[in-house]
Image 1 (tube, rainbow, N blue to C red):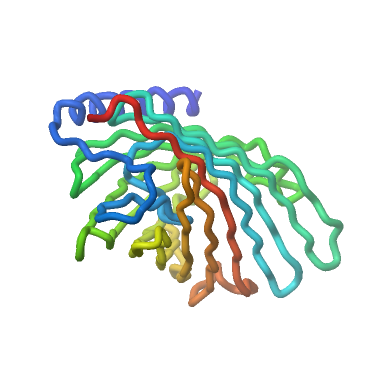
Image 2: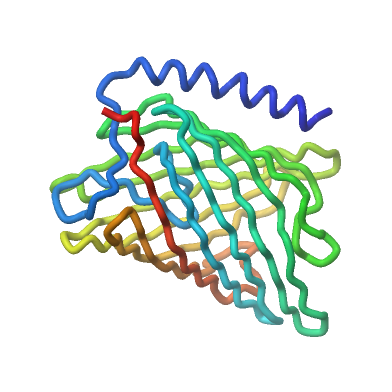
Length: 270
């Protein structure tokens, strides 16, 4: 029942936002041509979820090196815009771990479905709101899932600036609300800065902060990376997340991420 109420509430919130945004003229365009000329460009980051509306499929691989072993996840993330300011999202991960003293495990992780609506969608500013429902499809006992239903609500911001609008600033601030009793509400503040060069290579850095609304100290990471855009709407790239401070960083050496993005231009944009 809680899941049904959350889904209906999410639709009630995002649908009016999307309808309002469609009245805004001069909507921005998601550009899939090579990033050689002047910007602005819209870079799909690794940890800072994007504000802009897309049609994409993005398989990735994250390898986490720990003091006592390793974990990995291989999610396939999809987003499909239905109208210029509204898109549905899907995330299907395969997870695995190899912890010293325990047997290795691998299998399906927690599947997430969601929606995103842009309240402001302009060439020089995008503000959107997203909701994601995380389902406990992964085996918690094997370390493949969280074992609980969660609802994530997040504002997202995209802002280009600098010479030829080649620099962009993004913010993603999700709040994860457990739909079952006994769990803590958590939050994140992810910020990203990216610069796209004339040879279609983007260098970027992300700052990640995680915290609990109940108690405990926040945790911090920094993640430099790059992306290289290829013809036909493809992108390849990598990122290296490094722990800085906080309880969630204990025992983590690094997280290495690699990925491919296939993006389609939106047919209904001006």
